[in-house]
Length: 380
Image (cartoon, rainbow, N blue to C red; front, side, top):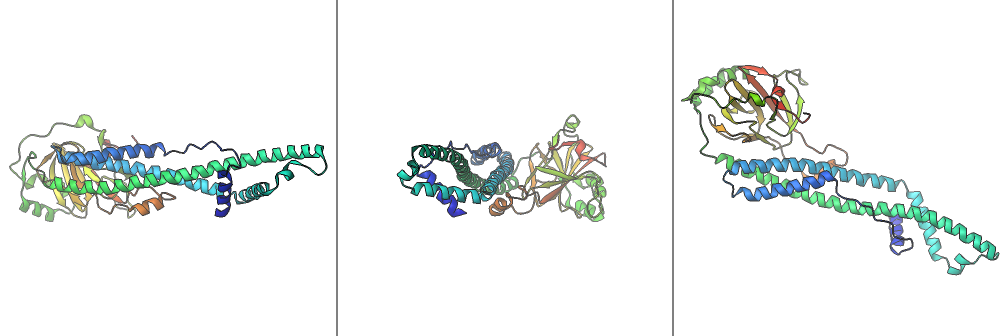
């Protein structure tokens, strides 16, 4: 099959048939948009060193990379599917290509006189000429169609290589941005502080708590020197807050999991190492390991409201600190998907690796409520 295609390409290149109009094959719009996003993210990363609020700059940078890389994977998948479809079309035309190559070779080898003069005379020569013209016209259409597909295939290969290079650079730079973000968050100073945590009281509360409900209800007991008052009321933003991480809700409020366990929160599937941020300005009420939830951060956006975020691999900030909206509070676990695996999966499997899960619970006046009454999802 490869030899037949090469032969056809050679014959076309030699100019046996008129040049067909080159097919316009371009990178899908989503991939072009993602490439632009990644360029912006790269510029943001370069400028982060000069930012007065480096943590905020790096958080925005990581978020931009996550968004751009997700769209780029979708674009790469679209390109790969186009390639596969063209390969399948050409593979299904083996017989036609073989016949075309044979006809073209025969015509190309025949003496000019044999193509012009018929042995039975002028009338039959004219008739045969008309037949040859009809046949050549039919063959020319088929060759032109095949030539366009081969041109498309070559163009798609170039575009695929470009998209792969952009994706590779983006993955590398995103990981660098995450590393710098973790370092900047650890070095963060001068944040407002509403109270100081008493570590002994915290340890006692953890030991005495068999459930998250018990622990959350006793949070007021672990503080020292709390400043009176509360952060501004955010009830007017109810239903419009962004989820603390980019991802997809895969289990709803009070929905049982595969083991039949019911939790009064939602579970969000995320990509590995995704950055987790505060949905609004909030006080860190607790930060650390808790029960079977792994690393947990409990945020208080206003008096009487708690956002419980669990399942992180690393957490930022100290208990008692007040964080601005959009501040990073940690990173998800897992390993970033390798480029080779990502490219293989674009052909048939999922293009996003939502392998990590974040648990989100909202407690209002110590009672769990459906978090989706506060947060908007991608479906909204």
